[in-house]
Length: 410
Picture 1 (cartoon, helix red, strand yellow):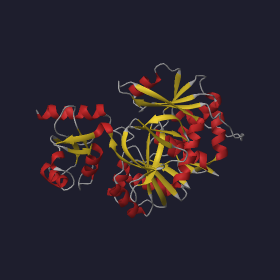
Picture 2 (cartoon, rainbow, N blue to C red):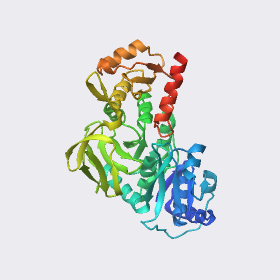
Picture 3 (cartoon, rainbow, N blue to C red):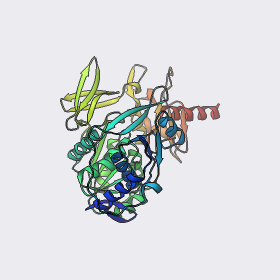
């Protein structure tokens, strides 16, 4: 049985288990490890080896040195890279097991103070989440991902999902559309793509053939329904979307091109108290607050209306930053872009990546989709947005770029 496709060759379950056992004997005897492996198979070998060594993997918000340093502060940890994780191990060995209560990973998010906030994930919760995801999307064959395994979505969808459901993972992380097409051709069909809206948009814009594609799962940022529909028409495969957070992991899914309603994952329950919503149950062991504005349809379904902090009211009219971003990204010629609203500002602004598109033409196109009250002023054209490797754009990075643009124009 193929566990992974690595450098164009299949790796069996027995070979994986042998590599894990061999690595576990070589690991430093510390309670924590920072797994910086870029190769997805190497990450999984390292993750499994640390588990049977009784260790916990720290997952910083990025692999930038400062982020790693801040997340490791106060933890007796060592780092693991591709070179150490791919050391080998060939002897046949017995399957291994992990205590469901063991804290397998600690995921860090950026807190309101800028300091990382830790969220513990037990092995049992990760396994339950992988099985719930398999039940929702019915994936089969080989899993290919454009997101890093250190990200919560990457861990859930490209490591735990194949590992716990008898699927194969591809070790690579293709970023360019042509690279993705080549990677899909290497692995056995059917093939599932785990990706972000940014990578999906690039592949659709390039009209990239994706042979043997059976389905797509998107997360990390909101997916535009039109983009989902275009992808389904191009590849003849369903496109699903995850709603979740680093704190809770996967919360709900939907097939975005067909329905704007989200369905809770198996076992997850949504509760309301004092106008605030939280989720718990299934793989979500502790109650987790929902930061978004939502409308409950029934016990298992709801719709989203943007983050409460991102709601915008101008001249008596109301919308959300998410809705404005979606309208912006639908404009032909826009490769990337984001609206923003400074504290106390009377109007929204925008940063836009749109080579060859004039500001007047962009505003005219936006006027067809949004109320004139929300047309961006100021409007800054930039070469690229300062997104992380997961496709996310932090508030600090956003306003640092805004400040730099305003200083140039002043």
